[in-house]
Length: 304
Ligand SMILES: [Zn+2]
Image (cartoon, rainbow, N blue to C red; front, side, top):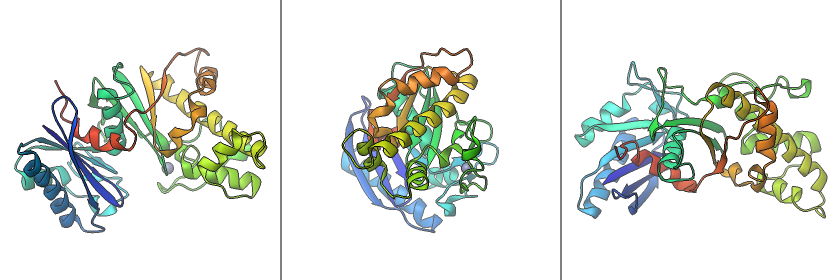
């Protein structure tokens, strides 16, 4: 049995998978805010609760909204800031009396989709979470590539490539810089861009719906906003393909539900921006949706 725990900003979820990847049980509790010791206890209680329910013991993987630096074992870059600077993996391993593996939540998403999701046929997979923010992760042979500094896949905080004068300097990002990819190709960025150009506030799904309906009042500006989103996504992914050239790219997060990401125009634009002008990298919609984070945490202990 494999147990995965996904520590989110407001909810912490745990899942137990059998060895075939079938879900046995799932539990969800509020994330303790600002209290590291309570976080350890909450994760421990979730794991032990699932083991009691199933009558089995499992391996434990934990997805966190940050990363663990290999050289120090300490968490950094977590927006659940009370985890930063803490030896989370070490403390969870001690609390649960077994080796616990922790990884960035975007890496967990990618491993989930590469293991038994949309990208399971592919070896080197890049996963993108286009949600409130924009995170990336790398899976190689179903294993996380965290990197020396724990920064593998942190593509969302690179600057938007080929930014036009109108796109500079870009909105401030929480990381301290401005104009990061995350500030453009995220739900927040999409809505802000539409509001900046039109003076109207619409949610991402409303913009997408208006873009698909020629009779909608905001049809033209919505279609233009969607076009800008696709173009910025293609520019950003082209840089990734030029460096990593993954076997597949899989998209997750709320914004990844836009059907226009998969109708061929994003792929076409990706080719345009990539060196040489022709690439055939599949751009896939995730299979496991919101469950990918917690499933990927469980798959931090792979089959082989
Ligand atoms: Zn940033």
